[in-house]
Image (cartoon, rainbow, N blue to C red; front, side, top):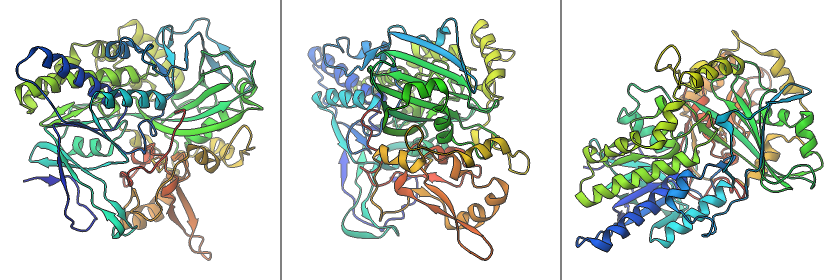
Length: 573
Ligand code: SF4
């Protein structure tokens, strides 16, 4: 019997079934690389084998177009790309620039200190500045040319399981109103069944979260740890920076106990990718990744690059930064996890695209063997892990296996311990340093109230030229959602009443107002006499970063996929 992993609020409807052999959920670099590599392996096999393979392969993508929801810095290490598409330059891979110059800087409020040399993990010689959304669109075109079916505007709403086996995905219903009742033109989501389902949903994927819990895939692992990256695209006057320049900064304006830092990448002499990363294990409930980004731009060095320019794009995304010990079990019956859904990201290098692509290629090799054997059991799919453990991806991730853990107490303490790890090959006194889930780090207002940070936030003046409030930034993300649909930021009515509007007000001061970089959560006065406030959710502002699902101290917010096609439309993501 096929069961769905969560109860549907939608009415009982007839659902069409579409049978596939391989179903990829999420069209990021991991799954696109997987689909291309799998088709290459099948084509090579069919040239020499009498037993031809003709697998039906589909990719589901919730964005309205391939790449629309992809966001990153991004500097690409081309190692995996060169394995997948050796002639990538000749085939029109969209590269903005080679990295030609780079610096790492330590910022204080008024000045900067450039490191005399770029620390080896941050060196980018031979790497490329790209736009991840253009890169994703290019990979998608290659996949389509190889016969992969790509369904854009379709979300994976539920996993279909039979006992301990994943057998496919139910796509989102289209045309439900905010009470989950059908509107005119309602179309029920279909059940897409597959011999193997590959979840490459990026960080904190909604289906990945369900199945990791249901199948206990994180047993004996560290929990995943996340950061939120906030990014703006800037057009600046010529003469300020040279194409191919890469800057990373650390320290200011973050409080001493918060991990994070910035990037500035010159895609051209006049177009910059500017971003700021804030860890979600901050103790301060008022920690605000968007504010940190705005304040960062007021530093004299950054101001000198941007002032007089124009901000033309905005986005935000979480980063799966926990490393090797936070990777869940990557396989189950009928299931593989790829990319950041599987924790493939090197936080020390601030890079994950090459690791995501490699994970997809290793998944493809495993699926190819499963197709030949016609066996998609856990015993066969376990080879994915074996291949990973023998790959350069494992070597890279294992060498920095304790990196993120040592920054739990902030930047300076972490830098010393991270330096020692480089000396000792990735270990300190213990082989594996533990990690607590991010939301456990948040302190209650009564115990730790950071008056200085909060006062700065509350008095900060967004000038609309260099610095922008959340709504102005969200406008530049081009995010759109159908207004009359079920709220995809799901909190039960009981939790809204008992937690959000009561306990959280006094215990944490409703941190969702601060950590969401899109002003989705607001506490509005509901009773003029008492001043009592109630939570209001502006779901249509959401840029799908998943910060709320991770950082909520009570874990009562569940990010669900909205109607497919909704969300940001990144063009230089
Ligand atoms: Fe990110 Fe959640 Fe805000 Fe959407 S509602 S932008 S997922 S924090």
